[in-house]
Length: 196
Image (cartoon, rainbow, N blue to C red):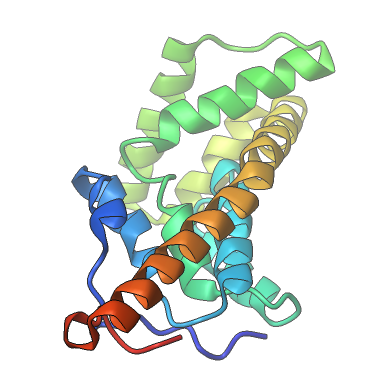
């Protein structure tokens, strides 16, 4: 289990880290500043990416905490990655899970507008009652065969995004740290933070 999951606040992203723009870029740049091994950070990002694609909103953080007890991953990196699933992206992501699952299982289901209507009703219920009541109603309305398709599609898409996330994140962090180390050796006064 990874104990060192803090952000190295003394480090500043390199030019490489600054290439990303917007809120999404800021989230991913935080991975560069985590004080942990590149492997642990990359594994956390990959697992977070997988979980983000599963229709498990509301328990995603609990899943990460539980998995971190048995898998040597960086929890903060996983938390950063799950935020690709957010209030803006959630409906399109879950609908894609649903459509992919239906396709792979050879089933038919509702169109996007019908799915969106069901989602909007769920949000209204969540605002009036509770998140858990709304989630229960959403899944009941979706029905077990279509819910199975959504989980299956999410598992497939989650795997397809998590598998490349590990090596890409690993290389990105290693390259950043090599550049950071080189800059520190060349000009110790310009160090970008503590040595790893």
